[in-house]
Amino acid sequence: MTLDISSSKSGGVPALEVTHTDDPHVLARAAAEDYSLHIVPRSWRTSRSSVSMAWFGLMSAMFFVVVGATVSLSVGAADALIGIGLSVLAYGAINSVAAKFANQTGTSVSLFSRVVFGRAGSAFAAALFGITIAYYVVAEGAIVASALHAYFGGLPMAFWAFVVVAYQAPLAWRGVTTWLDRLNGVLLPLYVLGLVGSVVWAIAEYGYSNEWLTYKPETAADIGVPGWWFSFVIYMGVWVVTMMAWDYARFGRPQDAAFNARVSFGTPFYVVTLLVNAAVGMFLAQTITIAGPLSEESAILGVIGMMGIWGLLWVLVSQTRVNSGNFYLASTNFQNFFARTLKFSMPRTFWVAVVAVIAYLMMLTNVLSWITTSLQYQGVLIVGWVAIALAHIVWMRLRKLAPDSLEFRPGRVPAVNPAGVGAWGIASAIGILLILVDEGSGALWAPPVAFVVAGVVYSVALAFYRDGWFVMKRPYDPRDEVDDMWEARVRCHRCGDAYIAYEMDRDPAAGHAPICLACASDDLAFQRAADREAAAYRTS
Image: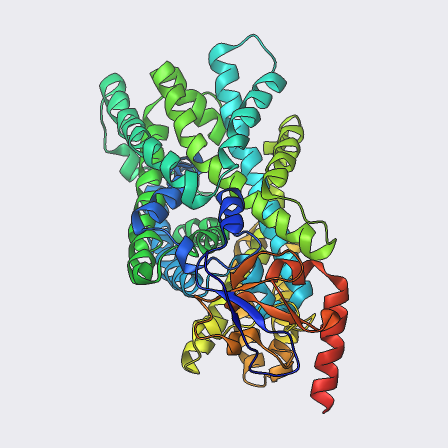
């Protein structure tokens, strides 16, 4: 690797050690770490097919098969399909915007949250995202454990829960561009075969009828809102998908940004994930024999009862695809949260193991009985985050600000951004209050109200914004000292590794030597010195 020493343009500070090729040590670690605490350089970006294969693991979540059937049983097939169709359009529009911006900036949810909430607020966003996805790890893993227990019997559920965690967790030890894309690419045809096969099998065994399309519940549920609105709001509870899309889209190549936004993360993906899966679930629920009330667990057991070992294999394939991604996202965000708040920085593989232990212990409880309630409250927080993220992206576009002009470096953003924290806090409080006041209609209005309030309050705040909300101005910026901040790599004085100048800063606690994003986030001495320097610079 060829290195050259650049002389500082600022004077009085150490020269930057610059190279335009990747650091071999960084590349070796990135195979597992996947730049989880850093900006993804363009050299690590991957093809549109690779990004799609990794992301499409979400498509096979049994949750999407069952939720459509559940909504249909509550409000009827017509209203369910209308609400799902509206959700497809909403998901497609929102996640297309979010995915393109993540691609352009290379930021994770945690890093972008630092822009709109400040350092403290971003830590809460990482915790919220990580905990939410950990719940999905538990819920989806519990389904596989139940399926294995139902098919093989004999051994207790605790054994099968251990089997599930033991085989799924290692699948997330490597990253999106080095493993998850290949794993999901191999398993995708098997999932499609199982999905189509379940429909064909049901028709062969029970015959076909259009009643699943015309179904109406005998006694209409008193939900206080139109059926299609009920359906739409139920799917709003899963807008954590936007955060998930963000953390995958940042691996896309710049030249593929438009395609990835429109197709891989856009409406076509949700036509299959939401609409097709829901239609299959609605058909199966009205056709095959299911013991007891419809749930993810009872539906899976019904499929296995019909298809036998082939149904079990379909469940294993589908849940392996989605849970490998869930383990990956949960571990990444746990890593970010503990590194940022407690300065406890460990490899991402360590956090995969932590998530596995937590998931196993939670699976030993009656998790499906309480996890839905918890996710209901977290859903209110998540839709508020989505609204603020969209408002900020639109604001930047209206002001013609380049996406990569974002300031996320810990030494150059304030502890709290009052616009983002205020909007998120107000919207979340109102949404949670609605749920507490009325768990029926109040819970149905909580997500859309929280979304609107968060977006409006943040947008109004931006009309009166101050630069200090988003940036702590300090001298000596490595971004300005190199020819190309995306291609020039600068060596960090603390860890000795070289990262792109876009994420690098100078450490006023070490004579303004260059420091990388992860080291700056973990170093209290750096943070205090940066705060003092910013205050002095502002005064001068």
